[in-house]
Image (cartoon, rainbow, N blue to C red):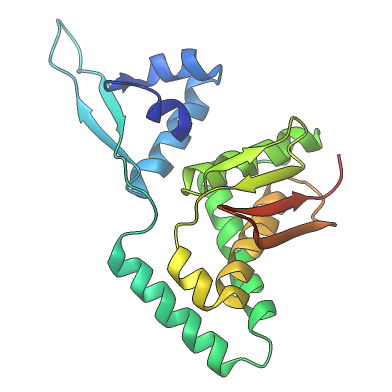
Length: 200
């Protein structure tokens, strides 16, 4: 959804986004509400045109990554977990799983029968969070070309990348997908981390 919005040169309505994305308007609404809460989308009312309430217009904010104060907080928390935990990667992944389930629930996640669709929902979530997710057709191998917490991830990859892997596992669970084989390889190639979402 965020990628579709970023492709638009001017603010668009929810109905237009539904038509562009092929998603039901209720699904689009849930995505837009989550993106607005994350500060990745700006919403404002259109000019009045006849009777009834003006339509809301949506525009991607252009925000890349977390605001600096949140990135600083994330780095401080990562440093503390790294320093004080006997199992920082596992603790970070556990926290990430809780976060991933919560984020998916906020998007109205329900288990889906098709694993590719479930993985696709998680890829969309990652894209909305600013990871620049680029997946293969089966949504099994995903290149993450951006990181909202890149500086902290370079300093404390065990914690930050652990949280991100947990986030993925938690979201997969919320969509009813198997998490076995899910793995994240930080900085696997220049400019990208590599995420594997189980098997096709």
